[in-house]
Length: 148
Image 1 (cartoon, rainbow, N blue to C red):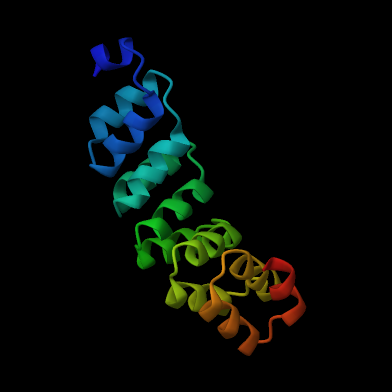
Image 2 (image 1 turned 30 degrees about the vertical axis):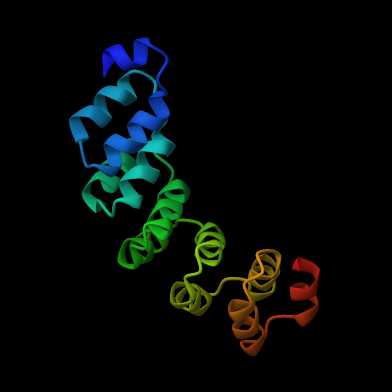
């Protein structure tokens, strides 16, 4: 790894990959070399590695980066845990819409996210089924049009 970094390899890509593969010692070393904690926690959450996510959070990594990775990785229980720990629900909503995860969006709406904002995001992405569902839940139709 040292050689790769000396040849210009990205520390941030390396730490995300190491965390996704649950290689904690390598993650620790890369962080000591200046790699991004945000990329590390995103990679760990993308892989669904809750223990590594917890450790990275204890080291100051962002819950919001973690929730984005957990949603992208389709790890609903990890998403729920991160939201319960204070991760931004809006980040999770945006990722859920972008990755077409309607069931997760339904859960997030049940947690009190702004439906009008969500329908605007869904409209921007052309996610018709999500737009229709959000409108059926009381989201403003005008916001969907604004997003489209």
